[in-house]
Image 1 (spheres, rainbow, N blue to C red):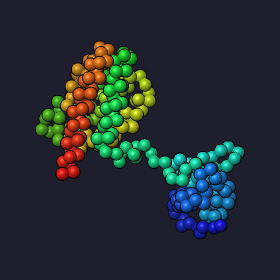
Image 2: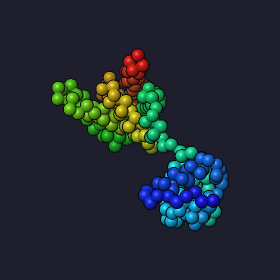
Image 3: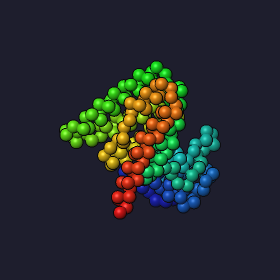
Image 4: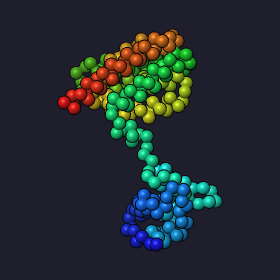
Length: 233
């Protein structure tokens, strides 16, 4: 069955889209093996190299999987949306709520596990955050509204990194862009209190670290809820 030749440009994108449509229509259900490159190329009216790139694109989107010596198989009828895209669409209050769950545990771990290298990184991040806060109070700060937000997130990233768990570090990095947008929209990085928080982590006081980060993040959560209520009014 032929499905018509494709326009010459961009061939790979068009071929990938045609394959997506056929999978969505049920021509190849989940678990089905796709025809070989030669058959697909003839069906789509393109070369084998174009088919190869189109298949690679769908594999990257989580719809196809190549099994060595067996062929290419359908593993999902719809593209798997990237986590970053989901976070970008999520409500800021929801993203922040999960951030709070992550960070309250992370600072407890950081207080117990922080190394000398972590201490150096935290001192440097704290200095940057305090400098950005001081600059934000100056009239000329309006020219760079993101400086304090970026410095604040860098400090919190250093706190999470001090937990010594690379999965937590990567998770925070995934959340950071969505958090940054939410904080920029608020026009604030939060209530601060970073000096006491860093001191608690460096002193190994897990209870104080958790209490302080919870207070800071609760303050941001309140601002986010208030902002959402204003928009809904």
